Length: 102
Image 1 (tube, one colour):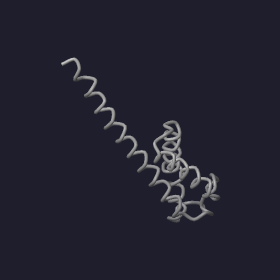
Image 2: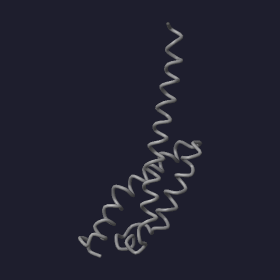
Image 3: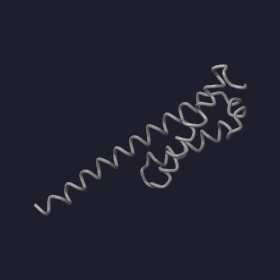
Image 4: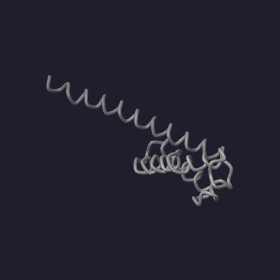
């Protein structure tokens, strides 16, 4: 009975690691696709990084996350994608809907 716990722990840890990897890949992919579909002048109107910078940051982190080697870059990539999705995306949406200042 005592030897079953470490085996069960490894199975659960593997499942959790794969789930976290898939969620982080999905978040970064959604952010990258949305970024690539937007017009460049909207980023300048918001006063944020240019479109190319956002695409490069999220794209490089997505590639590193897909390899699964450097966990710190994966977390940085998820943070960058979430900043884009939660801060820049609503601003771009306001600009394109006609509610914004651009």
